[in-house]
Length: 133
Image (cartoon, rainbow, N blue to C red; front, side, top):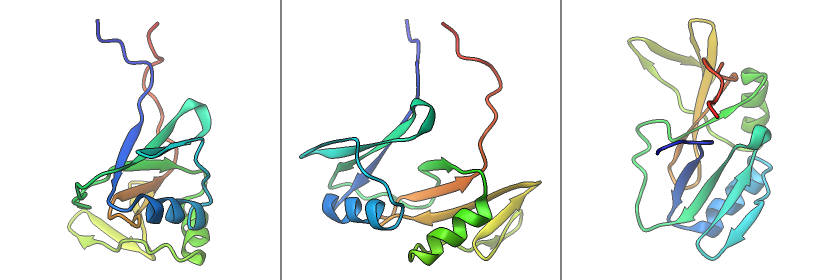
């Protein structure tokens, strides 16, 4: 029976060393696990994500990873100070100001990592139902 326990994202990196440097220098993250094929970053609540060596290239046209923060605008300012460039959008239904969009009271922002993966920074998402055991 399919019975998921947790979920996590994996992101491709054409240059794993460059990606590790981005996550270390720009986001302040240190891998919890590492081998020749990739790295795992752990976050709060038993969550995390992986970055793996791949010849594939992300499209960068859709969100591939969401990172939850308590203060979106503060996080954006902190990351911008470290050289992270946030995406700017001005389309029907989505407009950013200084990299931050307000989606009905929920502020979010997007940036691309060194490999072109599109990452969202946003407020914590409420889980509708507890996990089944």
